[in-house]
Image (cartoon, rainbow, N blue to C red; front, side):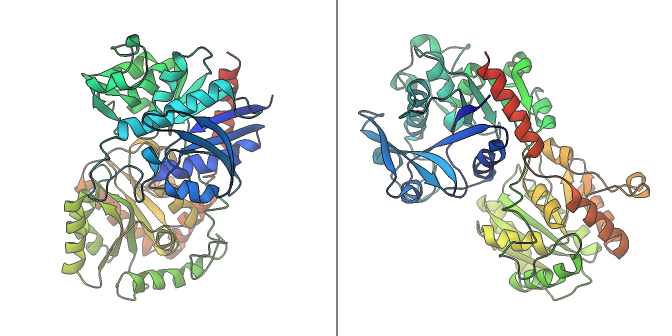
Length: 480
């Protein structure tokens, strides 16, 4: 049967992006179309969203959305069916969707994303100019209240809540609850209350009809005290409703054979073309032009979760392997200073660019020999999927989706012609260094290295299998 799904999220590629959440929300509609599922995506009306919608039609007025009137604007953006919430008092702010220019959270983020959830629940219940929705799919804490509003509405619609990262929970003071318009019984242990605060992510976990997260291993890990972030008990209690559905890539968007950000485009049959990309990458990061040196790279947030401090402590192993290091990212001030300091102390061997630059990231994937992903925990990770797709062998920690997507090139795997990268235990610079040295040894064996690259690029990192899983979940919810 055909299904109409309302997706609710705080960002969506290519309209607004700060991380992997946007890539997932932007890719799912196209992937699910093959399963007779039509997705309409609701986004806050940030300036970039309203600009993308342009002269799209007004679909509904909301007289008072937490302090001011709002309009819902619906239109097609880059092939996506988008509903934008035109509420300047909540979303009409340039820059980050979440942060003030000084890097602190907007003090009214609780109201802003309650507005997203309340608008979504209203549309889910009443439809929108001829569109009726069978299922609501909400993403991360910013949309977590949607399921609570639906549960206490006159016409509940079944909902799926997806956890992209359990570490970000959306917690606000208990006194904030009275401003949300929910009945008193919604605030309690069996509800929004979370260690004396209002928990938006907890609302999604408690009130949604089904829960998913972005890899099978992470779905298991978050049911343990070690990775459950205080919510493991709730998640164990809801284990029957919890699905681990691996993220994928839009393989048309992420395609080294057509990627215009690369000086030389290539595929698995034209791997020597990567040499030109490596040379351009070395030049761009101020590294010595040396084809013999394995070029290791990191792309992502400069954050403790991502293990950037572990990477910096493993620099001696990179040098012992005869390698170079390129770092692209932004984030924690202390880690930023350490990355810049490492580059300053090792000119020609380490290059650091502090930026969120998707075009440059494509260059890194297309030119680096190996990508470092040493996360302490990782729900899924897209960096290793991009690395596989672009033939940059991933060196990853054995956590979450990293463990689900990379096959370690150990001796047993190599003897069978297997292996797509290198895996090490998490939270250990010494063991990360050992994996780097293994990679360096294989890099000096060109035939074996190329075979691993071909294995990596042969992996199916698309949404094909996972889209089928989501379609199955939606149909289960729509069927009651």
